[in-house]
Length: 78
Image (cartoon, rainbow, N blue to C red):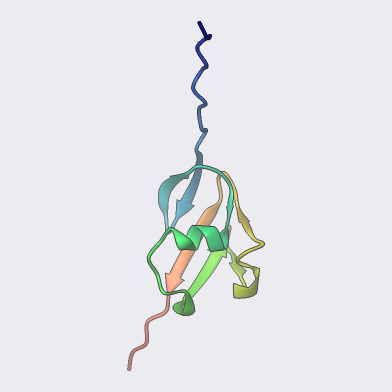
């Protein structure tokens, strides 16, 4: 008989996105986070902990446990 293998548990991390508590599996880049939400990438601005993240830094800027993320879509008008 083979011994039972304990199930691996995944510890979720807590972040805030636009003021709402969100759990994600692990730290991820801003780019990866944006892929999980339905917003047009050409018309948005992102802040992590009140620092604006330039579009060219989305892939290298990490979102970690406890971070506060603001995703703002830009709307044209007249």
